[in-house]
Length: 115
Image (tube, rainbow, N blue to C red; front, side, top):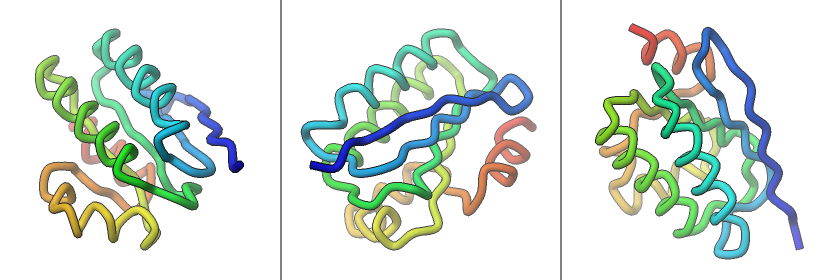
């Protein structure tokens, strides 16, 4: 089983949650609760970095959609960083790419969401 690791760093007081590994039914709950916990603090923005994710299932999509809904409710800008087909294809196939703000790298996300 491939474990999902998460690491939170901050760029200009914006939390960046970098995920590494596989996001599936077994691993999505800690991700969902971590994003909810960060959003509760109402940061200026929240960025999820999925560039190191090797498997991205429907639970991963649900985690992002839930986080986006919570961010909208709290008035927090939310962005997702990915440059891999593993993540982008499922988001495109489910049209979730139209709901989320997607970026190719963290710097782009921070610059766009900070403004």
